[in-house]
Length: 324
Image (cartoon, rainbow, N blue to C red; front, side, top):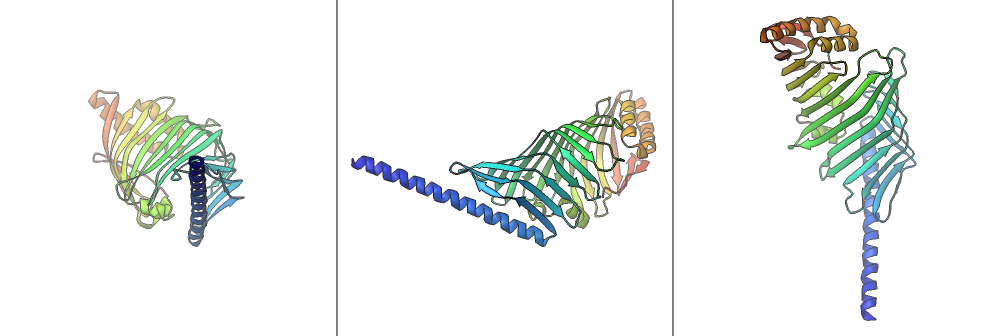
């Protein structure tokens, strides 16, 4: 009898302790959310989570909203979407999975407006004492429907974005687009895979400063670790090398550029960016000459860009416009 009473007592104490811990953690989450919203508001940004609710007791911690909205008065970025559901194990609240329901409205800093839909949009987040350490987002069958008739609708079969902290204050970013296409067939469909290193930016992002704000204030330094653009009609373009963007949006860098199937690649680029077709043709002439000299269908070139001016070796081939 005494043993049974002892076991019951221990069980009740464990349940009580677990319950206190669960409600303490959820209270801390609510406090953190409130403080974060206040800090963002002070910086001209607003986050709304309609009918915010935290539940999941006893084994999960779930944050749910009927609708979410983010706006930045400085950049003009606005994002509105449907229901948000997130879940983390109560014993591991620093790891969460988030699901966002379609549709969404998006206004970009350049005032372009889109409606967006998707079949699935999920994110996973792992946080440490200093903030998020890893963030991954994956969307399936994403469609961007511009409100301007001048811009064609865009569909992406698989969209991925990954970010992780490395070293003390650097960020590693990866973007993957599979079968990105124009629904109006105004440009060829393509696959894109890009991995970037951004130096000395993690603390800015954690303090809720957008990368665009950082770039406009002091520029960005980093490296294109891998960039691969592959139109599905043929041809590939791969780029790697150190890069920087100044506060005026001008790109500089020393790149190793590899081109395969030049004719198909230039054709795809010319269709995708008709206003830049002459520059692509000029670059193709230089690449073609070097390709013939090497006797190979694939050619790798050293490309230098200084404040937007492009040089293949000592030969100037054009100038890039500001990136923002």
